[in-house]
Structures are given as structure tokens and as C-alpha cells.
Image (spheres, rainbow, N blue to C red):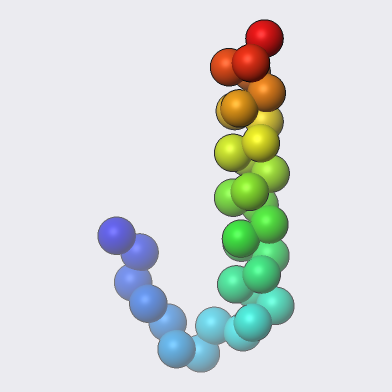
Amino acid sequence: MQELRQERSVGELFGQLTQDLALLVRQEAQLAK
């Protein structure tokens, strides 16, 4: 589990979330083939 950092900016969080979503979408696309 990642350590929670209170100083992490919303921009960083949103960027990480976007990366995670993009990765999930790619994985789903591979499974769908």
C-alpha cells in the first residue's frame, strides 16, 4: 500500500488517476481482443 502524503497536490493526484485509468483501459482492450 502506498504511503499517503498530505502534501501531494490535486494535480499530482489527478495525473496519477489519469495514468491508472489509461492503463486499465489498455488492459481491457487487450482482453477484449
